[in-house]
Length: 323
Ligand code: PBG
Ligand code: ZN
Image 1: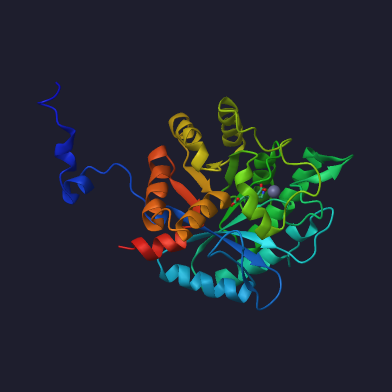
Image 2: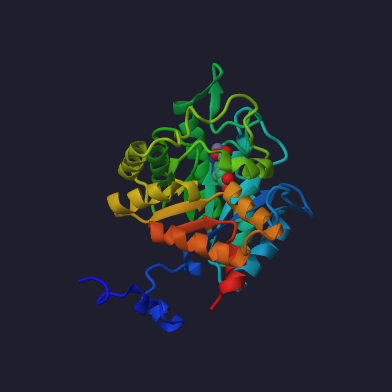
């Protein structure tokens, strides 16, 4: 059949029919809001490269979480901004670390689902995601620290663990450690497909986690590669990952779709800091309509195949589009 019998415009005639045939929708249930927890008191400092996003000390984080819950959001992912950093990133796995304290405080005051980023880079003086041995990021000795970090998050009350370090074998190591410590019910959302990306720039400002030497290309993926994403995801699912994440999201829609087509686990994408800032700045300049661009972007992730979207726009979206 073809024109004039076939006319695509019939199903675009008005809002009712357009909504009826809509294939992808963003729902608040899909969104995870990242929070930067700063060590100290009375801190609420806007991140200069991320308008509307703040480093907050725990009492402000709790107030924020109560507000997020009222807005209808249900999940957050936590990043730590500690005072002290050292070679081994010991703040990451101390039971009194900034994230461990934040988890307990949030859990005391809200019913939010608390996901924690498991990595060392926010806590190491050199800013790398693993231990440095002979000038290089050492894979296998890093695994033990990641295990300790994951277990200490779970002990503090985290609902889900999200390792972002890109060391080989970390999902298996973390699954093992969680199970061995009575946390077999805590899921792992693996940053399985994490590219070495310049879109992380503003995040590294926020977390003060830019590597002091070299870069992350010996552990994060080369953005030219697509088959490698499938191998990484396959491996992590074998090791026990419950959810697979693609990061960044906007320049990697093809990868999100590959994951959706190839695997039957839930797929998450991380709409990262640089992607957020680009929209914010263009909107501030009046070049684009922010509200509409945000809806279009998040809907694009769903259409690409993401079930879960981690985004700095979550709060704004909840305010603008709550039904
Ligand atoms: C830490 C981590 C990073 C992000 C999430 N976890 C930064 C990095 O790898 O340098 C990026 C998040 C963002 O840009 O919004 N491993
Ligand atoms: Zn890291």
